[in-house]
Length: 637
Image (cartoon, rainbow, N blue to C red; front, side, top):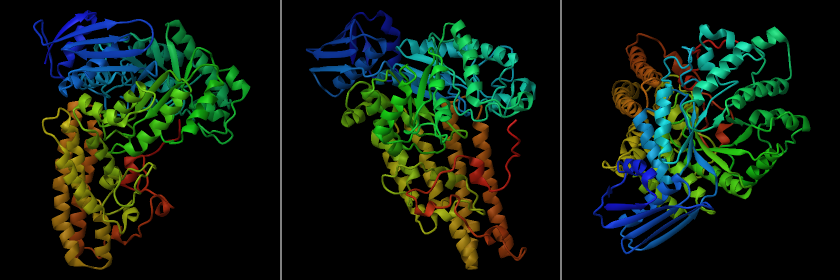
């Protein structure tokens, strides 16, 4: 497809040229299609017209043009010769938040690829969540060996996004969630608890000014997210020993004032998570209870110049969102909202919960006229998943952002065009966490794809959860589904290699601990020998294939730092599988009288799970792998 550009296209040309990496077209003076680009003033409408081989795109903001351009190309490629499209933006700001703090720091090429897809979707912002993964001059331990971005790297990312009209916004932490920095002995003078900074210390505020100056300078945006969520340890460590007890709200209010003095001095607009204010206002300590009434003193001591961001990822009740948004409005400033696509703490992407929760949230945001909406892609516990697995969710937010009511057919068409992957393929990822034992339509958090992989075969921490369930056949069938759904020519087909290989591992491993315990209890030596000398070696072979696929995917998407954490997990799994074979053969050969691990009664990891609609949830690898001590947990300070 050859296109001749006319009108207001000069500032768009670099972005259009970059999109040739994703879309099939050429820019030429001798073209069959003439496209007039027309920047307009006024409302937030997008207009796309096409007839008689001539097209016109009317837009106000740069990001709108690129959405409109992709809509034009999509329609023409479908063979449509005449069409008219009009859309109206529902939010002023909409885009993802990428978690670059939980070990996966996206590399430049992968980030550029993501930005091009966000541009086609029409999203206009992205937050970069960086606890310590950015360069701070004079602080060598800040992000040390964590793949931190240099200021030059961040500047390049910002430049690339800017040509598509996408605002990159740094999102940092200025109070808690700084464990990976504060663990170093060389920075103990900044430390209150494991993750919280020492307040009422001038050294702390010198550090914070350096951090904020360093992270904001590479970006065009004047917005900065200063974090401050989940700071329950505030003032309870070294601060308590030095200064005695002080109310947490008093500490937080004074600290926020000092941080805002820094952001004001740099001409920045601060955003912060709202959960601590609402938690301190709640009688039950619940961050977002519909029953919470915010006391006047909290409202009065919350500075006007900071925007609060309400985050919620798991409620599917639209009325809940309406009420919590109303609570935020008591602060006399319109809040921002952050939903989530559940890619964290699992190999799967929980679209079942994510899309229903997001749909309710976005409906409420439109009703309450919220301007700024983000979708978080957290990476808790050394992310085994990846942001590309959430692209259907990002498209979901984009389609909501350009229509009062979501059109599901259009969503499916758009995600296939913008990403090259069918919606049904993304939804298949959800099935990694829906084996037998998980009710159809389950909306609870559950992550068997993770705990059934990492749990120890001899110890079987989660075996009780799957007793009597044919999980092996389920994952064997899912392997075939992944194999049959893949399209080798698709640019993102590689993101399904890990799910396919994982399903193949779980087809043997998911239920092997239950079978091993049963054979041992029955003293079935034939079955024990088969498990130890045939099935376990085959599982090991499949795990090695999974590890190789996972390593290839990680290094294609991310900087190498952080992969060692997942690599160590695979190494531990393979070594423990080897130990299973040794222990069983020692028993069969009479070298040991019993296998003590298999003498133990199996208990539920989560009591009461037998009556639940899912197989349960576990947030941490080390809890899945062993009930024993993985590392010594120090006092909070």
